[in-house]
Length: 349
Image (cartoon, rainbow, N blue to C red; front, side, top):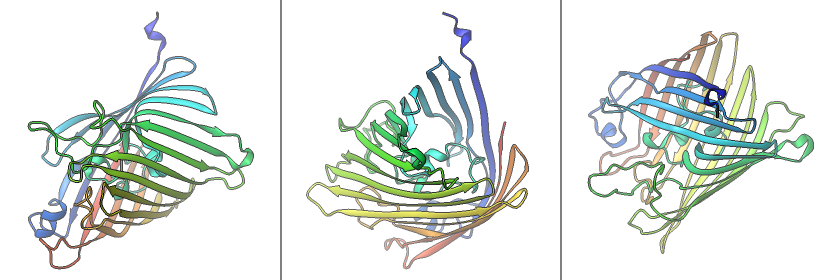
């Protein structure tokens, strides 16, 4: 066996951001919703590693070095996949992947350089940043084309561990990780099915939907069914993009009421030479008594910014965010908002 026949390829991505907001970090609002003083922040250092193992087998991984809010660095294997490609109609991947819920999660991975904005919509924030969705999963994924002529239908079918319950408390002395990369907290497996179309007649258009199902055991209540229905319509060309996504997260506690959490965003941008101004509005609204999302409540508001690409490998971004938050009556008397600014340099190497 000649091990040197496989070709290992590594591509790197990272960013540095200066950001701040109009609230002191020790104010009641920031105590409730976690904001920080104006800071320079090192973003994820992402090593994208691929290798062709044979004509049909490939390996893919994203190894991320990242600082947390306590200024400690850690290492995460965000994606790690062994992929087998039979043909355009059947591709099988096993390992840790980005769940095919909606569009953004599989279109943009762990690099801000690919994204127009300084960060992901908070609907698609990663689990360790407080995001509400199972962004990552560990299991098996099938994908491919569906014979459909010019309609361009594609499918994705996934089964995996799912995410740990957001309110799950691990045994004493252990830390919680929402992504279940080693052991599942229960024997039930998460299922996700997605279908989307890329019609030949409208270049750059993609429309689709997905349905995700899992069962969580947070303790109180003892059993919660989780269903996530998502739909998207995006139109992307080299000089123009328009992204639209909407979803509903339904939690059904055993013997209790049903909680529906709606969310979505729209994002539009147009490039003028090296400049790309953009606008995004996002919305997420969880009930105050939501059993798994007690910290989310209402988050909504616009973002306005511009991206400037001085070279093919560097992107400079300036972004203003205005986010309305529904009051936590124990801390705040009325709904309040956070205004924030961010200046980011993203790059690939």
